[in-house]
Image (cartoon, rainbow, N blue to C red; front, side, top):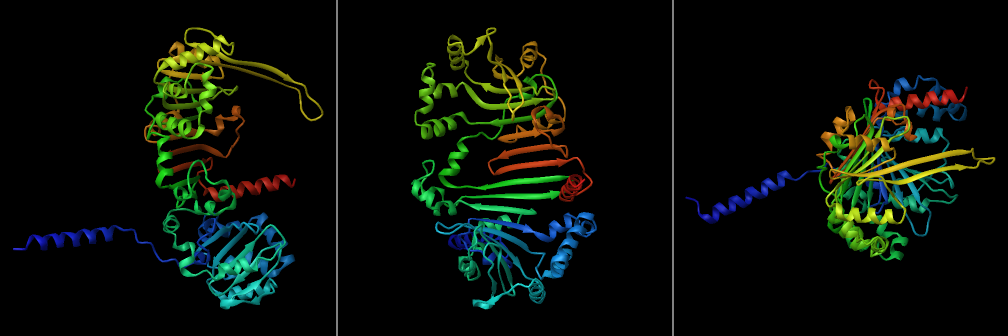
Length: 508
């Protein structure tokens, strides 16, 4: 029979083995990321071959616009035209990421560096000779060509670096710093960046808070929004852009920690609980936005921590406190735009306690800032104005007619009184696909937004090629999905074709 001590040891070994097996192992870095210093301000990763495939590069080369570009390039340099027609002829490894990083300096101009992994060193050398790049050898078997005011180039058998600044100065010393980056001093050692690079994307933008803390402006300010350097360090934000069939996907991933994460978390609740879909005036929305704020958190952070009495002074003249007014609301809000030639829009907020609102409305009425129309309805703004035109501006006439309403636990503001008439008459309930999507999503997210650009022309928003916009947010990040009107083509290729058509039309 095994002793209790032996059983305990077995249990400990099992737990350690299980924990180790559950750790996410990241593959080794085998591309040009290892040449980017760890203090780079930001890094963008671009999957070259993946983008070429999605753009259908082979058929793209046969288009009139591409052929014209090749002809112009051939007149300048035959090698340049060859590389444009066959990027692999450059020697660059198209299967590996291209990186664009930014280096900030308090004493020198901002420098942008593009880095490429090399698949065929001989092809790269041949391209450089064909482009008549005058290079000189430097340390570590690198060659370097300095062209102040343009891209300076450094390369060896593993990597090609292009350094660019806005001024006509040499960046040789700064670019050599990239070339001599030690293994333990590269941004490739950042676990967060490595994890993001394992995700699904065509283009990834990654940003660390640490570079902000190194800036002279931040150091001179002493702090930022009452956070010290230790609280802000080690915060990361990444944005992934992906082109799919008929869809453009955007995702913002947040990796926050410490006090900053706690404070931002206090602003919101996890979901909207108010049934705005049933309470809103009947109709088909052109766009619909909902959000769930945490009133207690907003009060603690914005009012007590940051505003430092400014908001209190503003509301004192109405006999109100900020805390009291905030507690009038539950935190759920909605903004809707209706399919209408005049651009009908409605704002709604769930009410927790009407008393502070009544006090504010009564005071505004006494001061002739509101006109009370009934027990629960007010006209808050009516503005008619003609702006005299001159040689630049055309004479215009502007009319706004807005009202607000307290009704069954909700506070409404509308730019067209007819919307509030519907509410009071009980003619409510949003309909259509956007309403259905929002009804499901608002109970799962902090923030949701849906829009149909075809119905939004009344709001000065035109995007004929976008069929639907969908956005949402949770505590991990933000998602934005753009559905194109052409579902047959990859969205990247579709955008390229649209640009070609615009270019052709401009040349007519």
